[in-house]
Image 1 (cartoon, rainbow, N blue to C red):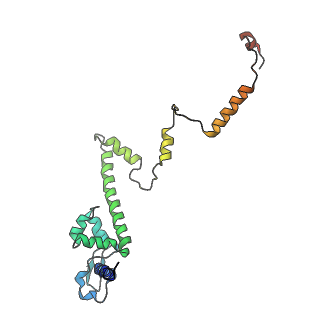
Image 2 (cartoon, helix red, strand yellow):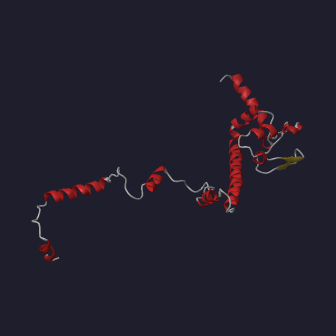
Image 3 (tube, rainbow, N blue to C red):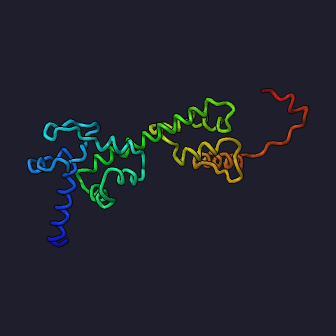
Length: 199
């Protein structure tokens, strides 16, 4: 990267920082309208600016658009400005928090709708809605089944033609077959002799 490119990137980052109350400097007080947001999750009153600075996290969640497009159109100058902002290391944690909170808000609204469907017995989605709630489909903290667990669950019941013995079971079977081969057969007993044979 050339020196001029680095300078340009640094200048763009400085312009991006001027959007936020957290980077307010004595020079920025001359242009208070440049400050658009705070990275706090709540709106903040700034004595230096004499006004309330809105939380970028709150605004992002209120717009309710996981593509970011509507948020950019309403609150920023251009998509390029949003790209520059997302590329800034100092903004990464705030961006992660914004997207995480929006995902939780969207999921919450969806689960409320599903819960409403689950209470309507005449709904054609009644069974699926209840199954979703019963299986904790809404809970991201319930670990999902691994592929091995799914296979183990599906393999229960009557064995298929491809059923194979485990290695230790195969050893037991081989041992048993050897015992049978080495054992001398006894003379066959009649039914009467078999019945009379002592236990």
